[in-house]
Length: 238
Image 1: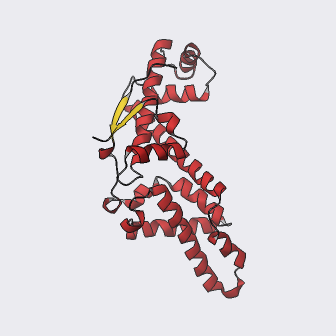
Image 2: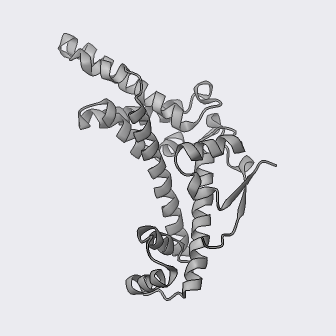
Protein backbone atom coordinates (compact mmCIF):
# COMPACT_ATOMS: atom_id res chain seq x y z
CA UNK A 1 0.00 0.00 0.00
CA UNK A 2 1.24 3.50 -0.84
CA UNK A 3 2.33 5.78 1.99
CA UNK A 4 -0.57 8.03 2.95
CA UNK A 5 -0.81 11.45 4.50
CA UNK A 6 -3.14 11.47 7.49
CA UNK A 7 -5.44 14.42 8.07
CA UNK A 8 -7.38 15.60 11.09
CA UNK A 9 -11.00 16.66 10.78
CA UNK A 10 -12.74 18.67 13.48
CA UNK A 11 -16.33 17.42 13.69
CA UNK A 12 -17.53 20.55 15.48
CA UNK A 13 -17.19 22.49 12.22
CA UNK A 14 -19.18 19.96 10.20
CA UNK A 15 -22.29 18.98 12.16
CA UNK A 16 -25.66 20.37 11.10
CA UNK A 17 -28.42 22.03 13.08
CA UNK A 18 -31.45 21.10 11.00
CA UNK A 19 -33.64 24.00 12.03
CA UNK A 20 -30.97 26.46 10.82
CA UNK A 21 -30.40 25.06 7.32
CA UNK A 22 -30.87 28.14 5.15
CA UNK A 23 -31.71 26.37 1.90
CA UNK A 24 -33.30 23.02 2.80
CA UNK A 25 -34.43 22.22 -0.74
CA UNK A 26 -30.93 22.51 -2.18
CA UNK A 27 -29.60 20.52 0.77
CA UNK A 28 -32.07 17.68 0.11
CA UNK A 29 -31.60 17.88 -3.68
CA UNK A 30 -28.11 16.49 -3.15
CA UNK A 31 -29.86 13.18 -2.48
CA UNK A 32 -32.46 13.30 -5.25
CA UNK A 33 -31.05 10.12 -6.85
CA UNK A 34 -31.71 7.86 -3.83
CA UNK A 35 -35.03 9.64 -3.20
CA UNK A 36 -36.22 8.95 -6.74
CA UNK A 37 -34.93 5.38 -6.56
CA UNK A 38 -36.84 4.72 -3.35
CA UNK A 39 -40.04 6.20 -4.76
CA UNK A 40 -39.71 3.81 -7.69
CA UNK A 41 -39.79 0.96 -5.17
CA UNK A 42 -43.04 2.34 -3.73
CA UNK A 43 -44.93 3.50 -6.82
CA UNK A 44 -45.31 1.53 -10.07
CA UNK A 45 -45.72 4.44 -12.51
CA UNK A 46 -42.89 6.84 -13.36
CA UNK A 47 -45.35 9.76 -13.63
CA UNK A 48 -46.46 9.04 -10.06
CA UNK A 49 -42.84 8.96 -8.90
CA UNK A 50 -42.15 12.40 -10.38
CA UNK A 51 -45.41 13.81 -8.99
CA UNK A 52 -44.64 12.67 -5.45
CA UNK A 53 -41.02 13.82 -5.76
CA UNK A 54 -42.12 17.33 -6.75
CA UNK A 55 -44.67 17.46 -3.92
CA UNK A 56 -42.06 16.35 -1.45
CA UNK A 57 -39.53 18.98 -2.54
CA UNK A 58 -42.15 21.75 -2.37
CA UNK A 59 -43.00 20.73 1.20
CA UNK A 60 -39.32 20.70 2.15
CA UNK A 61 -39.03 24.25 0.77
CA UNK A 62 -42.18 25.51 2.50
CA UNK A 63 -41.87 23.78 5.87
CA UNK A 64 -38.11 23.34 6.10
CA UNK A 65 -36.99 20.57 8.44
CA UNK A 66 -39.08 19.65 11.44
CA UNK A 67 -36.50 19.86 14.27
CA UNK A 68 -38.60 17.63 16.51
CA UNK A 69 -38.73 14.91 13.85
CA UNK A 70 -35.04 15.05 12.97
CA UNK A 71 -33.39 15.88 16.29
CA UNK A 72 -30.77 13.29 17.22
CA UNK A 73 -31.30 11.41 13.95
CA UNK A 74 -29.59 11.12 10.59
CA UNK A 75 -30.86 12.79 7.46
CA UNK A 76 -30.83 9.43 5.69
CA UNK A 77 -33.30 7.94 8.20
CA UNK A 78 -35.46 11.06 8.35
CA UNK A 79 -35.84 11.22 4.57
CA UNK A 80 -36.80 7.58 4.08
CA UNK A 81 -39.62 8.02 6.61
CA UNK A 82 -40.72 11.34 5.14
CA UNK A 83 -40.70 10.02 1.56
CA UNK A 84 -42.75 6.98 2.53
CA UNK A 85 -45.28 9.16 4.36
CA UNK A 86 -45.55 11.44 1.33
CA UNK A 87 -46.20 8.46 -0.96
CA UNK A 88 -48.89 7.16 1.39
CA UNK A 89 -50.50 10.61 1.62
CA UNK A 90 -50.48 10.98 -2.15
CA UNK A 91 -52.06 7.56 -2.72
CA UNK A 92 -54.77 8.32 -0.18
CA UNK A 93 -55.60 11.50 -2.09
CA UNK A 94 -55.73 9.57 -5.35
CA UNK A 95 -57.95 6.97 -3.74
CA UNK A 96 -60.34 9.65 -2.52
CA UNK A 97 -60.48 11.21 -5.99
CA UNK A 98 -61.14 7.90 -7.74
CA UNK A 99 -63.41 6.42 -5.12
CA UNK A 100 -63.41 2.63 -5.00
CA UNK A 101 -61.69 2.27 -8.37
CA UNK A 102 -58.16 2.42 -6.92
CA UNK A 103 -56.73 -1.04 -6.38
CA UNK A 104 -56.42 -1.52 -2.62
CA UNK A 105 -53.19 -3.55 -2.90
CA UNK A 106 -51.27 -0.60 -4.35
CA UNK A 107 -51.96 1.42 -1.20
CA UNK A 108 -51.04 -1.54 0.97
CA UNK A 109 -47.71 -1.86 -0.84
CA UNK A 110 -46.72 1.58 0.41
CA UNK A 111 -47.93 0.92 3.94
CA UNK A 112 -45.95 -2.29 4.40
CA UNK A 113 -42.80 -2.15 6.51
CA UNK A 114 -39.54 -1.29 4.79
CA UNK A 115 -37.91 -4.54 3.68
CA UNK A 116 -34.25 -5.33 4.19
CA UNK A 117 -33.72 -5.11 0.42
CA UNK A 118 -35.45 -1.71 0.24
CA UNK A 119 -33.13 -0.44 2.97
CA UNK A 120 -30.04 -1.86 1.25
CA UNK A 121 -31.00 -0.32 -2.09
CA UNK A 122 -31.56 3.02 -0.35
CA UNK A 123 -28.18 2.82 1.39
CA UNK A 124 -26.43 1.81 -1.85
CA UNK A 125 -27.95 4.76 -3.74
CA UNK A 126 -27.07 7.09 -0.87
CA UNK A 127 -23.49 5.82 -0.91
CA UNK A 128 -23.23 6.36 -4.67
CA UNK A 129 -24.54 9.92 -4.35
CA UNK A 130 -21.82 10.70 -1.79
CA UNK A 131 -19.09 9.14 -3.92
CA UNK A 132 -20.27 10.94 -7.05
CA UNK A 133 -20.25 14.31 -5.28
CA UNK A 134 -16.86 13.54 -3.78
CA UNK A 135 -15.41 12.85 -7.22
CA UNK A 136 -17.01 16.01 -8.59
CA UNK A 137 -15.29 17.97 -5.84
CA UNK A 138 -11.96 16.46 -6.88
CA UNK A 139 -12.66 17.30 -10.51
CA UNK A 140 -13.40 20.92 -9.58
CA UNK A 141 -10.17 21.08 -7.58
CA UNK A 142 -8.15 19.61 -10.45
CA UNK A 143 -9.57 22.14 -12.89
CA UNK A 144 -8.64 25.08 -10.67
CA UNK A 145 -5.37 23.86 -9.16
CA UNK A 146 -2.98 22.69 -11.86
CA UNK A 147 -0.76 20.68 -11.82
CA UNK A 148 -2.89 18.61 -9.44
CA UNK A 149 -4.34 15.62 -11.28
CA UNK A 150 -6.27 14.26 -8.29
CA UNK A 151 -9.43 13.34 -10.17
CA UNK A 152 -7.62 11.89 -13.16
CA UNK A 153 -5.24 9.66 -11.20
CA UNK A 154 -7.93 8.43 -8.80
CA UNK A 155 -10.38 7.64 -11.59
CA UNK A 156 -7.73 5.84 -13.60
CA UNK A 157 -6.50 3.79 -10.64
CA UNK A 158 -10.06 2.88 -9.65
CA UNK A 159 -10.92 1.73 -13.16
CA UNK A 160 -7.69 -0.27 -13.52
CA UNK A 161 -6.96 -1.90 -10.13
CA UNK A 162 -4.72 -4.52 -11.74
CA UNK A 163 -2.23 -1.94 -13.03
CA UNK A 164 0.90 -0.83 -11.16
CA UNK A 165 2.09 2.78 -10.94
CA UNK A 166 4.31 2.56 -14.03
CA UNK A 167 1.43 1.23 -16.11
CA UNK A 168 -1.01 3.78 -14.75
CA UNK A 169 1.36 6.66 -15.43
CA UNK A 170 1.83 5.42 -18.99
CA UNK A 171 -1.93 5.09 -19.47
CA UNK A 172 -2.47 8.61 -18.13
CA UNK A 173 0.02 9.94 -20.68
CA UNK A 174 -1.63 8.01 -23.51
CA UNK A 175 -5.13 9.17 -22.59
CA UNK A 176 -4.55 12.71 -21.40
CA UNK A 177 -1.03 13.66 -22.48
CA UNK A 178 -0.11 14.12 -18.81
CA UNK A 179 3.46 13.10 -18.03
CA UNK A 180 4.05 11.80 -14.49
CA UNK A 181 6.72 9.50 -13.15
CA UNK A 182 5.54 6.40 -11.31
CA UNK A 183 6.62 7.97 -8.01
CA UNK A 184 4.73 11.19 -8.73
CA UNK A 185 1.66 9.21 -9.76
CA UNK A 186 1.74 7.35 -6.43
CA UNK A 187 2.10 10.60 -4.52
CA UNK A 188 -0.80 12.25 -6.35
CA UNK A 189 -2.93 9.12 -5.92
CA UNK A 190 -2.35 9.08 -2.16
CA UNK A 191 -3.27 12.75 -1.94
CA UNK A 192 -6.38 12.18 -4.09
CA UNK A 193 -7.55 9.38 -1.81
CA UNK A 194 -7.04 11.58 1.23
CA UNK A 195 -8.97 14.41 -0.42
CA UNK A 196 -11.84 12.06 -1.26
CA UNK A 197 -11.83 10.77 2.32
CA UNK A 198 -12.03 14.33 3.68
CA UNK A 199 -14.89 15.15 1.31
CA UNK A 200 -16.81 12.02 2.34
CA UNK A 201 -16.35 12.82 6.03
CA UNK A 202 -17.58 16.37 5.46
CA UNK A 203 -20.65 15.21 3.52
CA UNK A 204 -21.60 12.46 5.97
CA UNK A 205 -21.09 14.69 9.02
CA UNK A 206 -23.48 17.22 7.51
CA UNK A 207 -26.21 14.57 7.50
CA UNK A 208 -25.95 13.93 11.26
CA UNK A 209 -27.10 16.55 13.72
CA UNK A 210 -24.38 17.23 16.29
CA UNK A 211 -22.23 14.44 14.89
CA UNK A 212 -19.69 12.80 17.15
CA UNK A 213 -16.91 10.42 16.25
CA UNK A 214 -18.83 7.24 17.13
CA UNK A 215 -21.93 8.24 15.15
CA UNK A 216 -19.92 9.34 12.16
CA UNK A 217 -17.87 6.14 12.01
CA UNK A 218 -21.04 4.09 12.37
CA UNK A 219 -22.71 5.93 9.48
CA UNK A 220 -19.62 5.53 7.30
CA UNK A 221 -19.59 1.80 8.02
CA UNK A 222 -23.34 1.36 7.42
CA UNK A 223 -22.91 3.04 4.04
CA UNK A 224 -19.82 1.02 3.12
CA UNK A 225 -17.63 4.15 3.06
CA UNK A 226 -15.33 3.42 6.00
CA UNK A 227 -12.73 1.75 3.75
CA UNK A 228 -12.44 5.01 1.79
CA UNK A 229 -11.91 7.05 4.95
CA UNK A 230 -10.29 5.22 7.86
CA UNK A 231 -6.77 4.82 6.37
CA UNK A 232 -6.56 8.55 5.65
CA UNK A 233 -8.49 10.48 8.31
CA UNK A 234 -8.11 11.10 12.03
CA UNK A 235 -11.37 12.37 13.53
CA UNK A 236 -11.26 14.66 16.55
CA UNK A 237 -13.84 16.47 18.65
CA UNK A 238 -11.80 18.97 20.66
